[in-house]
Length: 236
Image (cartoon, rainbow, N blue to C red; front, side, top):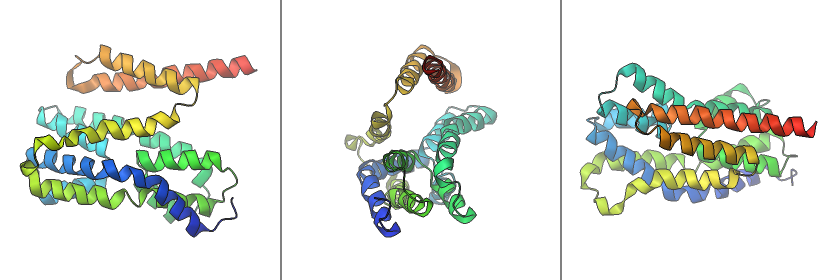
């Protein structure tokens, strides 16, 4: 399988990432609408999306700003939401770390939940892939998503409140994460981490400034790590 050409791996990535276009466009539309409702103009909205390129962090920051949350809390919360990207990067390093610096820099910018999920599943399924094949697959997986995210943001910012509520664009965020998380629940540690995070998030829903989500995320990671350690000890 690893003898396939880089071009063929690009199209494999493209096909694997293509289903996410059904949430990328609504998600982008929703952010564009939300940003204009929060008082950002089109230039500010598009700059926000183009430079941050992290939907969950963007929504988090705007929501907290609308709630008049202190700037320090806004920055900490947005960074905390995006800490998962740092973990994605660490997880991808064994597969892509030997690529040229400029490719790694581009990949770092394009790491999103979808490109990470598609890539890890493919890399684990085909361990004999070369570094160029892995890199081109990664870029292929994010190619259908990136332009639609930017286009959706623009259309949402332009149309603003003209988009009817009956379109229910807010479904895009939970559906996206469900579609990505489901296939990755392959070990006991993953399942425990997810369950602990859900329970703690529900228990801390009243914590101000949405800090309960940060607590839940930390609790989930600790629980998952403890299960991993326990399983490793049992094996040894």
